[in-house]
Length: 366
Length: 256
Figure (cartoon, rainbow over the protein chains, first blue to last red):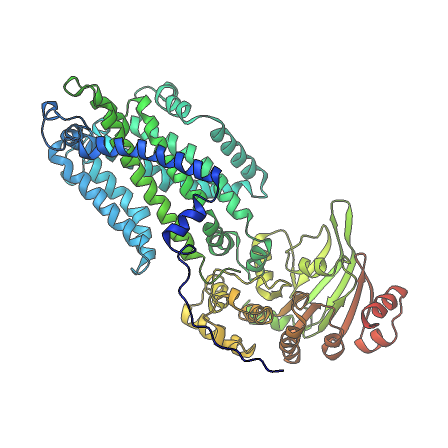
Protein backbone atom coordinates (compact mmCIF):
# COMPACT_ATOMS: atom_id res chain seq x y z
CA UNK A 1 0.00 0.00 0.00
CA UNK A 2 1.38 3.36 -0.94
CA UNK A 3 0.80 6.47 1.13
CA UNK A 4 1.06 9.93 -0.28
CA UNK A 5 3.29 11.98 1.91
CA UNK A 6 3.87 15.70 1.74
CA UNK A 7 7.10 17.24 2.97
CA UNK A 8 6.58 19.68 5.82
CA UNK A 9 8.49 22.92 5.57
CA UNK A 10 11.11 23.61 8.23
CA UNK A 11 9.80 25.99 10.91
CA UNK A 12 11.66 28.14 13.38
CA UNK A 13 11.90 26.63 16.86
CA UNK A 14 9.20 27.84 19.27
CA UNK A 15 10.44 30.81 21.26
CA UNK A 16 9.58 29.22 24.57
CA UNK A 17 12.19 26.48 24.15
CA UNK A 18 15.22 28.47 23.01
CA UNK A 19 16.70 31.87 23.74
CA UNK A 20 17.47 33.63 27.01
CA UNK A 21 13.89 33.61 28.24
CA UNK A 22 13.65 29.86 27.84
CA UNK A 23 17.04 29.42 29.45
CA UNK A 24 15.96 31.47 32.46
CA UNK A 25 12.75 29.54 32.75
CA UNK A 26 14.47 26.17 32.52
CA UNK A 27 17.33 26.93 34.86
CA UNK A 28 16.17 29.51 37.37
CA UNK A 29 12.37 29.45 37.51
CA UNK A 30 11.47 25.84 36.81
CA UNK A 31 9.30 25.47 39.90
CA UNK A 32 8.01 27.40 42.91
CA UNK A 33 10.98 26.47 45.13
CA UNK A 34 13.53 27.28 42.46
CA UNK A 35 11.82 30.56 41.76
CA UNK A 36 11.97 31.57 45.42
CA UNK A 37 15.63 30.54 45.68
CA UNK A 38 16.53 32.39 42.50
CA UNK A 39 14.79 35.55 43.61
CA UNK A 40 16.50 35.40 47.01
CA UNK A 41 19.87 34.92 45.39
CA UNK A 42 19.33 37.79 42.99
CA UNK A 43 18.23 40.02 45.86
CA UNK A 44 21.37 39.12 47.85
CA UNK A 45 23.67 39.70 44.90
CA UNK A 46 22.18 43.06 44.09
CA UNK A 47 22.15 44.24 47.69
CA UNK A 48 25.84 43.29 48.06
CA UNK A 49 27.21 44.28 44.68
CA UNK A 50 25.54 47.63 44.22
CA UNK A 51 26.92 49.25 47.42
CA UNK A 52 30.35 47.69 46.78
CA UNK A 53 30.54 49.13 43.28
CA UNK A 54 29.14 52.41 44.57
CA UNK A 55 31.83 52.49 47.28
CA UNK A 56 34.78 51.27 45.23
CA UNK A 57 34.24 53.14 42.00
CA UNK A 58 31.40 55.64 41.81
CA UNK A 59 31.80 57.45 45.15
CA UNK A 60 35.56 56.88 45.36
CA UNK A 61 38.28 59.51 45.45
CA UNK A 62 41.11 58.72 43.08
CA UNK A 63 43.43 61.71 42.92
CA UNK A 64 45.09 63.78 45.57
CA UNK A 65 48.01 63.76 47.97
CA UNK A 66 46.57 63.76 51.48
CA UNK A 67 43.50 62.64 53.36
CA UNK A 68 41.93 66.06 52.85
CA UNK A 69 41.40 65.07 49.22
CA UNK A 70 39.13 62.26 50.37
CA UNK A 71 36.00 64.26 50.81
CA UNK A 72 33.48 61.92 49.25
CA UNK A 73 31.49 59.03 50.64
CA UNK A 74 33.32 56.14 48.97
CA UNK A 75 36.75 54.59 49.05
CA UNK A 76 39.84 56.73 49.43
CA UNK A 77 42.22 55.32 46.84
CA UNK A 78 44.39 58.39 47.38
CA UNK A 79 45.83 56.52 50.33
CA UNK A 80 47.00 53.65 48.09
CA UNK A 81 48.25 56.12 45.49
CA UNK A 82 50.31 57.99 48.01
CA UNK A 83 51.84 54.84 49.46
CA UNK A 84 52.17 52.69 46.36
CA UNK A 85 55.94 53.08 46.23
CA UNK A 86 56.29 51.71 49.73
CA UNK A 87 53.77 48.94 49.10
CA UNK A 88 55.79 47.71 46.16
CA UNK A 89 59.39 48.37 47.23
CA UNK A 90 59.27 48.57 51.02
CA UNK A 91 61.99 50.81 52.38
CA UNK A 92 64.29 50.18 49.44
CA UNK A 93 66.17 53.44 48.70
CA UNK A 94 64.26 55.48 46.16
CA UNK A 95 67.15 56.04 43.77
CA UNK A 96 68.03 52.31 43.74
CA UNK A 97 64.55 51.16 42.82
CA UNK A 98 65.60 50.56 39.23
CA UNK A 99 67.49 47.51 40.47
CA UNK A 100 64.29 45.94 41.74
CA UNK A 101 62.52 46.82 38.50
CA UNK A 102 65.30 45.29 36.40
CA UNK A 103 65.32 42.12 38.50
CA UNK A 104 61.61 41.52 38.29
CA UNK A 105 61.47 42.67 34.66
CA UNK A 106 64.12 40.09 33.86
CA UNK A 107 62.24 37.46 35.82
CA UNK A 108 58.99 38.27 34.03
CA UNK A 109 60.72 37.94 30.65
CA UNK A 110 62.25 34.58 31.58
CA UNK A 111 58.98 33.21 32.91
CA UNK A 112 57.05 34.47 29.89
CA UNK A 113 59.64 32.84 27.65
CA UNK A 114 59.12 29.53 29.40
CA UNK A 115 55.36 29.92 29.48
CA UNK A 116 54.79 30.77 25.83
CA UNK A 117 55.05 27.54 23.82
CA UNK A 118 56.22 29.01 20.51
CA UNK A 119 59.52 30.45 21.72
CA UNK A 120 62.67 28.36 21.08
CA UNK A 121 65.67 27.39 23.26
CA UNK A 122 63.47 26.41 26.20
CA UNK A 123 66.15 24.25 27.78
CA UNK A 124 68.72 27.05 27.92
CA UNK A 125 66.22 29.56 29.22
CA UNK A 126 65.24 27.10 31.95
CA UNK A 127 68.87 26.67 32.93
CA UNK A 128 69.33 30.44 32.91
CA UNK A 129 66.25 30.89 35.09
CA UNK A 130 67.17 28.26 37.63
CA UNK A 131 70.96 28.58 37.77
CA UNK A 132 72.08 31.98 36.54
CA UNK A 133 69.15 34.17 37.46
CA UNK A 134 69.30 33.64 41.25
CA UNK A 135 72.86 35.00 41.34
CA UNK A 136 72.04 37.92 39.07
CA UNK A 137 68.98 38.69 41.17
CA UNK A 138 70.95 38.54 44.40
CA UNK A 139 73.71 40.75 43.01
CA UNK A 140 71.17 43.28 41.79
CA UNK A 141 68.93 43.34 44.85
CA UNK A 142 71.56 43.10 47.56
CA UNK A 143 74.35 44.89 45.77
CA UNK A 144 77.94 45.09 46.95
CA UNK A 145 79.11 43.98 43.51
CA UNK A 146 79.71 45.80 40.23
CA UNK A 147 79.82 49.08 42.13
CA UNK A 148 76.24 48.76 43.35
CA UNK A 149 75.79 50.02 46.89
CA UNK A 150 74.63 47.39 49.41
CA UNK A 151 70.95 47.47 50.33
CA UNK A 152 70.51 45.57 53.60
CA UNK A 153 67.65 43.08 53.62
CA UNK A 154 65.85 44.90 56.44
CA UNK A 155 65.10 47.62 53.92
CA UNK A 156 63.45 45.14 51.57
CA UNK A 157 59.71 45.01 51.84
CA UNK A 158 56.30 45.17 50.25
CA UNK A 159 55.38 43.26 47.13
CA UNK A 160 59.04 42.92 46.30
CA UNK A 161 59.71 40.97 49.50
CA UNK A 162 56.60 38.86 48.97
CA UNK A 163 57.85 37.92 45.51
CA UNK A 164 61.37 37.17 46.75
CA UNK A 165 59.99 34.88 49.46
CA UNK A 166 57.53 33.16 47.14
CA UNK A 167 59.85 32.71 44.17
CA UNK A 168 62.77 31.45 46.24
CA UNK A 169 60.43 29.14 48.13
CA UNK A 170 58.93 27.72 44.93
CA UNK A 171 62.18 27.34 43.03
CA UNK A 172 63.96 25.68 45.95
CA UNK A 173 61.07 23.55 47.21
CA UNK A 174 60.44 21.83 43.88
CA UNK A 175 63.83 20.09 43.52
CA UNK A 176 64.15 19.38 47.25
CA UNK A 177 60.61 18.03 47.29
CA UNK A 178 61.37 15.83 44.28
CA UNK A 179 64.42 14.36 46.00
CA UNK A 180 62.43 13.76 49.19
CA UNK A 181 59.63 12.07 47.26
CA UNK A 182 62.11 9.81 45.48
CA UNK A 183 63.83 9.17 48.82
CA UNK A 184 60.58 8.14 50.42
CA UNK A 185 60.04 5.55 47.69
CA UNK A 186 63.64 4.36 47.86
CA UNK A 187 64.54 0.80 48.88
CA UNK A 188 67.55 2.05 50.83
CA UNK A 189 66.50 2.08 54.50
CA UNK A 190 68.57 5.11 55.57
CA UNK A 191 67.47 7.29 52.67
CA UNK A 192 63.89 6.19 53.14
CA UNK A 193 63.71 6.79 56.86
CA UNK A 194 65.47 10.14 56.57
CA UNK A 195 62.90 11.26 53.98
CA UNK A 196 59.95 9.99 55.99
CA UNK A 197 61.14 11.66 59.20
CA UNK A 198 61.95 14.92 57.43
CA UNK A 199 58.59 15.08 55.65
CA UNK A 200 56.53 14.10 58.66
CA UNK A 201 58.38 16.52 60.94
CA UNK A 202 57.91 19.56 58.73
CA UNK A 203 54.34 18.69 57.86
CA UNK A 204 53.54 18.36 61.53
CA UNK A 205 54.56 21.83 62.67
CA UNK A 206 52.76 25.08 61.79
CA UNK A 207 54.64 27.51 59.59
CA UNK A 208 54.38 30.19 62.28
CA UNK A 209 56.30 27.95 64.66
CA UNK A 210 58.92 27.33 62.00
CA UNK A 211 59.36 31.04 61.43
CA UNK A 212 59.54 31.78 65.16
CA UNK A 213 62.12 29.06 65.64
CA UNK A 214 64.13 30.34 62.68
CA UNK A 215 64.17 33.87 64.01
CA UNK A 216 64.35 33.37 67.78
CA UNK A 217 65.90 30.00 68.45
CA UNK A 218 68.33 29.52 65.59
CA UNK A 219 70.66 32.33 66.77
CA UNK A 220 70.91 30.60 70.16
CA UNK A 221 72.40 27.51 68.55
CA UNK A 222 74.78 29.32 66.26
CA UNK A 223 78.31 30.08 67.48
CA UNK A 224 78.67 33.60 68.83
CA UNK A 225 79.65 36.14 66.26
CA UNK A 226 78.00 34.18 63.50
CA UNK A 227 74.90 35.93 62.33
CA UNK A 228 72.56 34.68 59.66
CA UNK A 229 70.46 37.31 58.00
CA UNK A 230 66.84 37.34 59.16
CA UNK A 231 65.50 37.10 55.63
CA UNK A 232 67.76 34.14 54.89
CA UNK A 233 66.52 32.42 58.03
CA UNK A 234 62.92 32.96 56.96
CA UNK A 235 63.72 31.69 53.48
CA UNK A 236 65.29 28.51 54.81
CA UNK A 237 62.32 27.92 57.09
CA UNK A 238 59.79 28.45 54.30
CA UNK A 239 61.75 26.31 51.86
CA UNK A 240 62.08 23.33 54.20
CA UNK A 241 58.44 23.62 55.19
CA UNK A 242 57.20 23.77 51.59
CA UNK A 243 59.57 21.02 50.44
CA UNK A 244 57.79 18.60 52.73
CA UNK A 245 54.41 19.47 51.21
CA UNK A 246 55.84 19.40 47.71
CA UNK A 247 57.34 15.97 48.38
CA UNK A 248 53.93 14.52 49.18
CA UNK A 249 52.36 16.04 46.06
CA UNK A 250 55.15 14.61 43.92
CA UNK A 251 54.97 11.22 45.60
CA UNK A 252 51.29 11.07 44.70
CA UNK A 253 52.18 11.73 41.07
CA UNK A 254 54.93 9.13 41.08
CA UNK A 255 52.60 6.49 42.43
CA UNK A 256 50.22 7.01 39.53
CA UNK A 257 52.81 5.88 36.98
CA UNK A 258 52.51 2.15 36.24
CA UNK A 259 55.43 -0.02 37.33
CA UNK A 260 55.83 -1.29 33.78
CA UNK A 261 57.19 2.08 32.72
CA UNK A 262 60.14 1.84 35.03
CA UNK A 263 60.65 -1.82 34.16
CA UNK A 264 60.73 -1.08 30.45
CA UNK A 265 63.28 1.65 31.02
CA UNK A 266 65.35 -0.66 33.21
CA UNK A 267 65.21 -3.42 30.60
CA UNK A 268 66.67 -0.94 28.10
CA UNK A 269 69.66 -0.52 30.39
CA UNK A 270 68.79 2.84 31.93
CA UNK A 271 70.10 3.54 35.41
CA UNK A 272 67.99 4.91 38.27
CA UNK A 273 68.39 8.62 37.54
CA UNK A 274 67.72 8.18 33.84
CA UNK A 275 64.63 6.10 34.56
CA UNK A 276 63.34 8.77 36.90
CA UNK A 277 64.41 11.83 34.94
CA UNK A 278 63.45 10.67 31.46
CA UNK A 279 60.52 8.32 31.99
CA UNK A 280 58.81 8.55 35.35
CA UNK A 281 59.05 12.22 36.37
CA UNK A 282 58.03 13.73 33.01
CA UNK A 283 54.87 11.63 33.04
CA UNK A 284 54.19 12.19 36.71
CA UNK A 285 54.65 15.95 36.32
CA UNK A 286 51.59 16.15 34.11
CA UNK A 287 49.46 14.63 36.82
CA UNK A 288 51.09 16.69 39.54
CA UNK A 289 50.41 20.12 38.00
CA UNK A 290 47.19 20.84 39.93
CA UNK A 291 48.80 19.74 43.19
CA UNK A 292 52.01 21.67 42.60
CA UNK A 293 50.16 24.85 41.69
CA UNK A 294 47.93 24.41 44.70
CA UNK A 295 51.04 24.22 46.88
CA UNK A 296 52.53 27.26 45.13
CA UNK A 297 49.37 29.26 45.74
CA UNK A 298 49.24 28.39 49.39
CA UNK A 299 52.96 29.17 49.69
CA UNK A 300 52.39 32.55 48.07
CA UNK A 301 49.76 33.41 50.63
CA UNK A 302 51.69 31.89 53.51
CA UNK A 303 54.53 34.36 52.92
CA UNK A 304 52.39 36.92 54.76
CA UNK A 305 53.27 35.10 57.99
CA UNK A 306 56.79 36.55 57.93
CA UNK A 307 55.12 39.62 59.42
CA UNK A 308 55.44 38.01 62.84
CA UNK A 309 59.22 37.94 62.68
CA UNK A 310 59.41 41.59 61.71
CA UNK A 311 59.71 41.33 57.95
CA UNK A 312 57.36 43.63 56.08
CA UNK A 313 55.90 41.83 53.11
CA UNK A 314 53.04 43.35 51.14
CA UNK A 315 50.42 42.75 53.81
CA UNK A 316 52.82 43.75 56.59
CA UNK A 317 53.69 47.05 54.99
CA UNK A 318 50.05 47.83 54.25
CA UNK A 319 49.29 47.22 57.89
CA UNK A 320 52.18 49.40 58.98
CA UNK A 321 50.93 52.18 56.75
CA UNK A 322 47.49 51.92 58.30
CA UNK A 323 48.87 52.94 61.67
CA UNK A 324 50.36 56.11 60.23
CA UNK A 325 48.59 58.93 62.05
CA UNK A 326 48.12 60.90 58.86
CA UNK A 327 46.14 58.08 57.29
CA UNK A 328 44.18 56.60 60.15
CA UNK A 329 40.88 54.98 59.26
CA UNK A 330 41.60 53.66 55.81
CA UNK A 331 42.07 50.03 56.71
CA UNK A 332 39.34 48.79 54.37
CA UNK A 333 41.10 50.34 51.39
CA UNK A 334 44.44 48.94 52.51
CA UNK A 335 43.23 45.41 53.00
CA UNK A 336 41.17 45.50 49.81
CA UNK A 337 44.27 46.54 47.90
CA UNK A 338 46.40 43.77 49.45
CA UNK A 339 43.69 41.20 48.78
CA UNK A 340 43.39 42.32 45.16
CA UNK A 341 47.15 42.03 44.55
CA UNK A 342 47.30 38.56 46.11
CA UNK A 343 44.24 37.51 44.17
CA UNK A 344 45.72 38.62 40.85
CA UNK A 345 48.87 36.59 41.41
CA UNK A 346 47.12 33.48 42.66
CA UNK A 347 44.44 33.58 39.99
CA UNK A 348 47.06 33.93 37.26
CA UNK A 349 48.89 30.88 38.56
CA UNK A 350 45.66 28.93 38.66
CA UNK A 351 44.70 29.89 35.11
CA UNK A 352 48.13 29.05 33.77
CA UNK A 353 48.05 25.64 35.41
CA UNK A 354 44.70 24.90 33.79
CA UNK A 355 46.05 25.92 30.42
CA UNK A 356 49.14 23.77 30.92
CA UNK A 357 47.06 20.76 31.86
CA UNK A 358 44.93 21.06 28.75
CA UNK A 359 47.99 21.50 26.57
CA UNK A 360 49.88 18.52 28.00
CA UNK A 361 46.90 16.22 27.75
CA UNK A 362 46.22 16.55 24.03
CA UNK A 363 47.04 13.69 21.72
CA UNK A 364 48.94 11.32 23.88
CA UNK A 365 46.50 10.17 26.44
CA UNK A 366 46.52 6.43 26.70
CA UNK B 1 88.68 -6.91 26.15
CA UNK B 2 86.49 -5.25 23.58
CA UNK B 3 82.84 -6.20 23.46
CA UNK B 4 83.33 -8.09 20.24
CA UNK B 5 86.18 -10.09 21.70
CA UNK B 6 83.97 -11.01 24.63
CA UNK B 7 81.18 -12.29 22.45
CA UNK B 8 83.63 -14.26 20.29
CA UNK B 9 85.25 -15.94 23.24
CA UNK B 10 81.77 -16.77 24.46
CA UNK B 11 80.63 -18.26 21.18
CA UNK B 12 80.54 -21.67 22.77
CA UNK B 13 79.47 -20.69 26.30
CA UNK B 14 75.71 -20.57 26.87
CA UNK B 15 73.88 -17.32 26.25
CA UNK B 16 71.84 -17.76 29.42
CA UNK B 17 72.66 -20.16 32.20
CA UNK B 18 70.53 -20.68 35.31
CA UNK B 19 71.74 -23.06 38.01
CA UNK B 20 69.66 -24.03 41.02
CA UNK B 21 67.68 -20.80 40.98
CA UNK B 22 65.14 -20.39 43.78
CA UNK B 23 62.87 -17.48 44.54
CA UNK B 24 60.26 -16.76 47.15
CA UNK B 25 57.60 -14.07 47.50
CA UNK B 26 57.42 -14.07 51.28
CA UNK B 27 56.53 -17.68 52.08
CA UNK B 28 55.41 -18.47 48.56
CA UNK B 29 58.03 -20.49 46.69
CA UNK B 30 57.73 -19.10 43.13
CA UNK B 31 60.76 -20.69 41.50
CA UNK B 32 62.06 -24.09 42.60
CA UNK B 33 65.51 -25.26 41.56
CA UNK B 34 65.45 -23.87 38.07
CA UNK B 35 68.24 -25.22 35.85
CA UNK B 36 68.25 -23.94 32.33
CA UNK B 37 70.94 -23.48 29.73
CA UNK B 38 70.22 -21.56 26.55
CA UNK B 39 72.69 -21.78 23.68
CA UNK B 40 73.44 -18.88 21.41
CA UNK B 41 70.83 -18.77 18.65
CA UNK B 42 68.49 -21.11 20.45
CA UNK B 43 64.75 -20.38 20.47
CA UNK B 44 62.87 -21.47 23.51
CA UNK B 45 59.16 -21.35 24.22
CA UNK B 46 58.03 -21.52 27.82
CA UNK B 47 54.46 -22.48 28.59
CA UNK B 48 52.46 -23.56 31.58
CA UNK B 49 49.39 -22.61 33.59
CA UNK B 50 49.13 -19.10 34.97
CA UNK B 51 51.01 -18.59 38.21
CA UNK B 52 53.50 -21.29 37.32
CA UNK B 53 56.45 -18.88 37.46
CA UNK B 54 57.14 -18.58 33.71
CA UNK B 55 57.26 -14.79 33.67
CA UNK B 56 59.10 -14.64 36.96
CA UNK B 57 61.76 -16.94 35.58
CA UNK B 58 62.56 -14.86 32.50
CA UNK B 59 62.30 -11.65 34.51
CA UNK B 60 65.08 -12.95 36.75
CA UNK B 61 67.40 -13.10 33.74
CA UNK B 62 67.59 -9.30 33.45
CA UNK B 63 67.05 -8.81 37.18
CA UNK B 64 63.60 -7.25 36.98
CA UNK B 65 62.97 -9.82 39.67
CA UNK B 66 65.56 -10.79 42.23
CA UNK B 67 66.29 -14.46 42.88
CA UNK B 68 67.37 -15.53 46.35
CA UNK B 69 69.32 -18.69 45.62
CA UNK B 70 71.33 -20.05 42.74
CA UNK B 71 73.37 -18.53 39.94
CA UNK B 72 72.44 -16.81 36.73
CA UNK B 73 74.90 -16.03 33.96
CA UNK B 74 74.15 -14.02 30.85
CA UNK B 75 76.67 -13.99 27.99
CA UNK B 76 79.25 -15.31 30.42
CA UNK B 77 78.60 -12.51 32.95
CA UNK B 78 77.50 -13.59 36.39
CA UNK B 79 74.43 -11.72 37.63
CA UNK B 80 75.30 -10.13 40.96
CA UNK B 81 73.80 -7.43 43.18
CA UNK B 82 76.15 -4.89 41.67
CA UNK B 83 74.19 -2.18 39.86
CA UNK B 84 76.89 -1.72 37.21
CA UNK B 85 76.88 -5.45 36.47
CA UNK B 86 73.07 -5.53 36.28
CA UNK B 87 73.06 -2.66 33.82
CA UNK B 88 75.79 -4.34 31.79
CA UNK B 89 73.74 -7.53 31.56
CA UNK B 90 70.64 -5.57 30.59
CA UNK B 91 72.55 -4.18 27.64
CA UNK B 92 72.83 -7.74 26.30
CA UNK B 93 69.18 -8.57 26.95
CA UNK B 94 66.14 -7.14 25.20
CA UNK B 95 62.67 -7.51 26.63
CA UNK B 96 59.13 -7.28 25.28
CA UNK B 97 56.28 -7.00 27.77
CA UNK B 98 52.71 -8.17 27.79
CA UNK B 99 51.41 -4.63 28.07
CA UNK B 100 53.98 -3.15 25.66
CA UNK B 101 55.12 -0.54 28.22
CA UNK B 102 55.84 2.06 25.57
CA UNK B 103 56.55 5.51 26.97
CA UNK B 104 53.27 7.37 26.36
CA UNK B 105 54.80 10.85 26.62
CA UNK B 106 57.20 10.21 23.73
CA UNK B 107 56.58 9.60 20.03
CA UNK B 108 57.25 6.19 18.50
CA UNK B 109 60.56 7.45 17.14
CA UNK B 110 61.58 8.97 20.47
CA UNK B 111 60.65 5.71 22.21
CA UNK B 112 63.18 3.96 20.00
CA UNK B 113 65.87 6.64 20.28
CA UNK B 114 65.83 7.46 23.98
CA UNK B 115 67.90 4.57 25.31
CA UNK B 116 70.26 4.67 22.34
CA UNK B 117 71.04 8.31 23.11
CA UNK B 118 71.19 8.07 26.90
CA UNK B 119 72.58 4.58 27.42
CA UNK B 120 74.71 4.07 24.33
CA UNK B 121 75.45 7.81 24.02
CA UNK B 122 74.74 7.85 20.30
CA UNK B 123 74.15 11.18 18.58
CA UNK B 124 70.48 11.85 17.81
CA UNK B 125 70.88 11.55 14.05
CA UNK B 126 72.48 8.12 14.27
CA UNK B 127 69.92 6.93 16.82
CA UNK B 128 67.08 8.06 14.56
CA UNK B 129 68.60 6.29 11.57
CA UNK B 130 68.85 3.09 13.56
CA UNK B 131 65.31 3.52 14.89
CA UNK B 132 63.87 4.04 11.42
CA UNK B 133 65.70 0.97 10.19
CA UNK B 134 64.07 -1.23 12.82
CA UNK B 135 60.68 0.46 12.55
CA UNK B 136 60.91 -0.35 8.84
CA UNK B 137 61.60 -3.96 9.70
CA UNK B 138 58.53 -4.26 11.90
CA UNK B 139 56.62 -2.49 9.11
CA UNK B 140 55.56 0.55 11.07
CA UNK B 141 57.94 3.27 9.89
CA UNK B 142 55.07 5.45 8.67
CA UNK B 143 53.81 5.83 12.26
CA UNK B 144 57.14 7.10 13.60
CA UNK B 145 55.87 10.58 14.50
CA UNK B 146 52.73 9.41 16.31
CA UNK B 147 52.34 8.83 20.01
CA UNK B 148 51.83 5.26 21.28
CA UNK B 149 48.28 6.10 22.37
CA UNK B 150 47.34 6.67 18.73
CA UNK B 151 48.35 3.15 17.66
CA UNK B 152 46.54 -0.20 17.90
CA UNK B 153 47.76 -2.84 20.32
CA UNK B 154 49.47 -4.84 17.61
CA UNK B 155 51.24 -1.77 16.28
CA UNK B 156 52.34 -0.82 19.78
CA UNK B 157 53.80 -4.26 20.40
CA UNK B 158 55.73 -4.09 17.13
CA UNK B 159 57.11 -0.72 18.16
CA UNK B 160 58.13 -2.25 21.49
CA UNK B 161 60.02 -4.99 19.63
CA UNK B 162 61.75 -2.41 17.44
CA UNK B 163 62.63 -0.32 20.50
CA UNK B 164 64.28 -3.31 22.06
CA UNK B 165 66.12 -4.33 18.88
CA UNK B 166 67.61 -0.84 18.52
CA UNK B 167 69.85 -1.68 21.45
CA UNK B 168 71.33 -4.70 19.59
CA UNK B 169 70.54 -7.25 22.27
CA UNK B 170 72.06 -10.72 22.02
CA UNK B 171 69.06 -12.38 23.57
CA UNK B 172 65.39 -11.36 23.54
CA UNK B 173 62.91 -12.12 26.30
CA UNK B 174 59.24 -12.12 25.37
CA UNK B 175 56.84 -12.02 28.31
CA UNK B 176 53.46 -13.07 26.89
CA UNK B 177 53.77 -10.64 24.00
CA UNK B 178 50.39 -11.47 22.46
CA UNK B 179 48.22 -12.05 25.54
CA UNK B 180 46.96 -8.47 25.73
CA UNK B 181 46.13 -8.26 22.04
CA UNK B 182 42.84 -8.59 20.20
CA UNK B 183 42.83 -11.83 18.19
CA UNK B 184 43.13 -10.11 14.81
CA UNK B 185 46.36 -8.41 15.88
CA UNK B 186 48.18 -11.46 17.18
CA UNK B 187 49.38 -12.55 13.77
CA UNK B 188 51.16 -9.29 12.90
CA UNK B 189 53.20 -9.56 16.09
CA UNK B 190 53.91 -13.28 15.66
CA UNK B 191 55.07 -12.66 12.09
CA UNK B 192 57.68 -10.23 13.36
CA UNK B 193 58.78 -12.72 16.01
CA UNK B 194 59.05 -15.56 13.47
CA UNK B 195 61.14 -13.37 11.22
CA UNK B 196 63.39 -12.51 14.14
CA UNK B 197 63.76 -16.19 15.02
CA UNK B 198 64.68 -17.04 11.45
CA UNK B 199 67.45 -14.48 11.55
CA UNK B 200 69.07 -16.40 14.38
CA UNK B 201 68.17 -14.28 17.41
CA UNK B 202 68.40 -16.10 20.73
CA UNK B 203 64.86 -15.98 22.13
CA UNK B 204 63.03 -16.99 25.27
CA UNK B 205 59.28 -16.63 24.79
CA UNK B 206 56.64 -17.07 27.41
CA UNK B 207 53.58 -17.63 25.28
CA UNK B 208 50.49 -19.74 24.78
CA UNK B 209 50.77 -19.54 21.01
CA UNK B 210 51.43 -23.19 20.35
CA UNK B 211 51.50 -22.66 16.60
CA UNK B 212 54.45 -20.33 17.11
CA UNK B 213 56.13 -22.94 19.32
CA UNK B 214 55.71 -25.61 16.67
CA UNK B 215 57.13 -23.49 13.84
CA UNK B 216 60.14 -21.80 15.42
CA UNK B 217 61.03 -23.29 18.80
CA UNK B 218 64.11 -25.46 19.23
CA UNK B 219 62.89 -26.44 22.63
CA UNK B 220 59.61 -26.15 24.53
CA UNK B 221 59.62 -25.90 28.29
CA UNK B 222 56.62 -26.70 30.44
CA UNK B 223 56.48 -25.15 33.89
CA UNK B 224 54.10 -25.78 36.76
CA UNK B 225 54.21 -24.59 40.38
CA UNK B 226 57.57 -22.95 39.93
CA UNK B 227 59.34 -25.95 38.46
CA UNK B 228 60.43 -26.98 35.02
CA UNK B 229 58.38 -30.15 34.56
CA UNK B 230 59.32 -31.08 31.07
CA UNK B 231 61.49 -29.82 28.22
CA UNK B 232 61.80 -31.24 24.77
CA UNK B 233 61.92 -30.43 21.07
CA UNK B 234 58.48 -29.31 19.86
CA UNK B 235 57.66 -32.43 17.90
CA UNK B 236 58.01 -34.94 20.78
CA UNK B 237 56.77 -32.34 23.27
CA UNK B 238 53.40 -31.98 21.56
CA UNK B 239 53.02 -35.51 20.24
CA UNK B 240 54.36 -37.46 23.15
CA UNK B 241 54.34 -35.49 26.38
CA UNK B 242 55.89 -37.45 29.22
CA UNK B 243 54.39 -36.03 32.41
CA UNK B 244 50.76 -36.17 33.34
CA UNK B 245 50.61 -32.47 34.07
CA UNK B 246 51.96 -31.61 30.64
CA UNK B 247 49.39 -33.90 29.05
CA UNK B 248 46.60 -32.24 31.01
CA UNK B 249 47.81 -28.73 30.15
CA UNK B 250 48.18 -29.53 26.46
CA UNK B 251 44.78 -31.15 26.29
CA UNK B 252 43.30 -28.03 27.88
CA UNK B 253 44.84 -25.50 25.52
CA UNK B 254 44.86 -27.60 22.34
CA UNK B 255 41.63 -29.42 23.08
CA UNK B 256 39.22 -26.86 21.68
